[in-house]
View: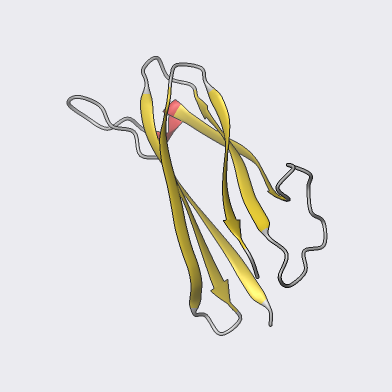
Length: 102
C-alpha cells in the first residue's frame, strides 16, 4: 500500500495581547529517522518511523508551538493524524518528532 506523507507544520505563538508571525520561529531539517535518530532512506512496512523537524525560537520571548503530522494514503484517506506541543525559550532549538508505522 502506498502512502502520501503530508506534513503540516503549525507553529502557534501565544502572546499576552497578540499573536506573533512566523518570523519568530524557524523550521528546518525535516527528515525520517529511526529511534536512534539515524536517517531512514528507504522505509518499509511495519518499521516505526519518526518524522522529525528542527524548531528554533528566533524571537525575544518564550513561545508555545504545535507540530502536526497528517499521513494520507493513496486513496486520499487520512490514516494518521498526530501532534505534539511544547514551549521554546529565546534562541532555543529542538528536534520535534512524531512516530508513525506504515
